[in-house]
Image 1 (cartoon, rainbow, N blue to C red):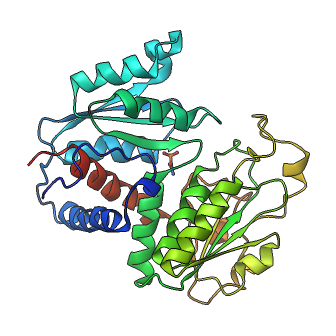
Image 2: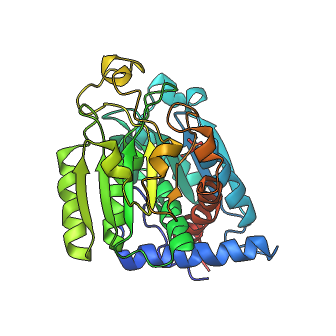
Length: 327
Ligand code: CP
């Protein structure tokens, strides 16, 4: 495998041409096949990546750590609260020094107004690829795995009706990075995307404008509704998931009046009946079960959440192999 994108940062899929994303997916499919067939994939033999986490993670941390091991390299998990970052060490110094110890830096920093700026600052000073493991604005690893899963399940993506739907949750005030990534990416693959949310959970205006531009250039569309039933009606894929009211209210309080007024925004068996008979239910996980979604849906036959989560491994490996490899 040729590491076609050696040194290229992976901060948002908006920085990657469609042909480049297709190349990442092609490698993801190949790595998936090889993993399932127990074939060796030592494309990153003796390479190291530093995996910095400002927040909790299950899928992202473990897909990266397991993934780099499958590729013959080593991932160092870094809880940033135990690094000198917690004493104020700069993004620049951290990026320069970690670059000198290895071949890639990956970071999750979801703090509103900070995360993406932190990653961008690292890209200015790092001499190795910097990979975004989720920031306040984007979650490109999730977007790539979601796209792979949709292709696997539905084949052609043109004119597929995909609904990205806000859902009620009490677990934590989730970043907007998953829906932002999805509504920017899916229209580039010709999908007809419906974005649904109750008032107060707007995404930034520039995201909506860019998503519409992406749709126009690629034959997809973006429609916004504040009616949950409209969002489910005839959809091929539904993605009901919570995100916080960061755009209108930057408080990190999880529960407020706007949230509790929208408790009925839940993915139910009844709502699923409005979707296409072959509709699939997706969620990046973790899901706030019985708040965002009824167990009968997430555990039911229309749910593809475990396939979606598994694909995080194969896509993470593709990104690392293509940006960090050298043979
Ligand atoms: N979907 C996702 O990013 O999961 P984690 O928060 O567990 O990494």
